[in-house]
Length: 349
Image 1 (cartoon, rainbow, N blue to C red):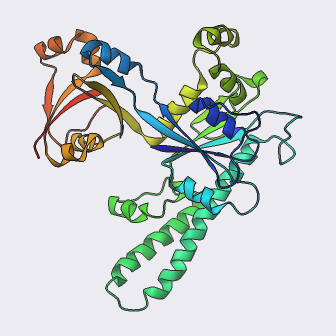
Image 2: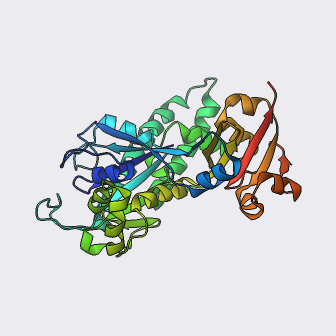
């Protein structure tokens, strides 16, 4: 899963990227127009260590998210096409808005106003989607006049895009448009930006830590500069500073959690003697879809899944005791996987 960190110039989005990914760069480094910073981040999850202690694999692997910092967006000029393409490839967006004052780094707009900046970001996403829709509608209006093998299909596409345009005009985004499964599939190739799951991060100054800014849920307030500085310290050195600031966990972990929430992801686990591994999966997915996350052969030859809940392993203390209490289950391909399930896939190909 790829998360794009986006924001206006000098909002601190690159600093946030550094804080989340642990990247260390020269002061003032930023993503130039058309450039990308990419970092792969393990998803913090204490269940990995707990399950490894119970099941004793040779190694334990956390699930990962890929974060990308995209330059050349929201500058007031036409966005770099490579930057827009990179944003389209993301599965979700983290929108960074600035709430900190700095005489050394003045806001490009001349004043700090997080709500205004968020509205401008959303407005640019709106315009980008609307442009794509209107150009395609114009093409379809011409093509559907002529009988072709695709005429009925194009008529359906035209009607769907006109609904999308009406939704944009009314709501300003496509993320709440009520779609059937086949309609969702039909729109997938457009990669509309306002349809992507999103979270908002308010980048505050150190003196503002703890103050929430009312924008749109889910909102997370953090000081990216301070988070980056804390992350650069060894854990032993870091703790006294965090205690002084009243911080119990780094907000980088909260950004990851907000991204998972926006995407509607849960975590399931697979385990054998070699490896315990965490996997991310869309909430509501079935056992056969989970099997496909691990390997296509597992989905193709799926027979059954042995399922154990992490909560049961906590309660009974061992896999042997879980089995003794009848809490290991055999589930079919339509079983809806729950967060924390440990799956052993039975398959034949």
